[in-house]
Image (cartoon, rainbow over all chains, first blue to last red; front, side, top):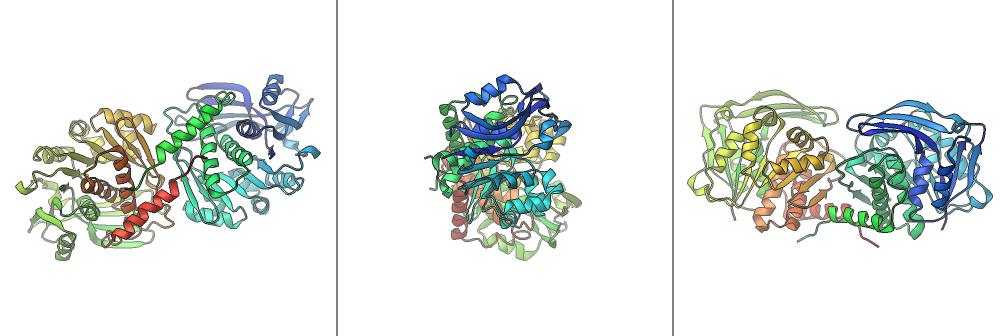
Length: 304
Length: 304
């Protein structure tokens, strides 16, 4: 079992109604690989940072047994920097600054030692780069991709092309509607599955997630949080927990995929409790399993 | 076991993107009592209609074994008429016409033979009238009330006063936020439970429902409908299925209340499939139990 993660590493400046974090660790590949590291080690990471990327963040990733052989460090460049500000209810965010920096020329090169990865998680990068990664991998067993409205709007053909190569797509509800031109999520899902991915996960934030497989539908609840401090990275954490559990168990059955959705939801529910990766940097197996069990307790019922 | 339902009977004119129905049977008490009739018979109804209320609607209600002793028929008055128009995505509706007619002077008088009803469902009428009904009932075992934003805004003190007398309140998510002045639904629920009702159900439309009891939380999924034709009456059908199952089983345990939420969701999911009461006028026990089982299948998962 081996898991490859490709995506961004970033320094995020985040403003929420509860406070602000300046140039703190972020990026899709960061959240995905740290979340997955609680299920499978090592996690193989492909990404790029600049010379300003803090040494202690490198050490942190290594401590999580994340294999950084595929991490390009451009010494005379600067790390991708995103500055976002969330609305009062955290449902909307404005991008104040998006400095792509070294990420603008990111060319994801998969090291030879990573080319036989059986599980692959493609974070939110351009669909052309996602495809380029996949063409370097020898027969992956299961490929998961994330995307976002920017690519749906600006690289639609490339995205549809890339989708033929993936087993699972993870997107949120508004992206699903935009990609399919269907308001109803059940119809939207059928259409998107027709583009290629047999498995589709639609995330609905505080309303949980929907898992669509060939013939089955699973409606996962959300964790009932009283306070959300920072939604950044929740979707990536979900993806990391999901693929991490699948890679660990090497079981792609529908029953196990449902568990993977709950593990993904569990990690995401921790992520939003604090800023950046603060809450998920030191999770314990007992905490994770405990939250999984809470999801079960909150959603199960019996027939008479 | 006996169930009393109080609320409106109406003739609705409904416009949706899929068509229009003119002066068709509607009203909260109608949806509640017809939905509950699939669980318990007879259902005792208290309401008011005008001389124009169609004879065949009276016959239909009688066929459902709804006891109309408490139905006031004002021969020289007109029945409450509501004309609503739904937006393209059915998420919003405008009230084009609201002719209260005989409903404006509704004085809910509970017949002597209804005064010892153990289960009571108060449809969406003014909180003063809801209280007036309750003061006529001898020691009800379980009282459920519905309300709406209009009463939250215009009769807030009366509503808070009435809430001290009910065991359960059923409202939707925006109403819960408005009533509690809390954006987060978990916090909102705690505050509303503090007003009186030990049990609270927050309906979230296509995202399911939340059931809060003393110490427990249940997150019920929604039914994955590909097409919704008319959302009118969904909330009332939910209430009817919920209270109907409780009255039938006479079991107020948390486990059984969860089942009642799923039965309510099941009836509501049928209601929206066609206009008015068209879909729920002839449900069979097999259809209802089948849908209950689908809710279970769509939401259950196992630990390893």
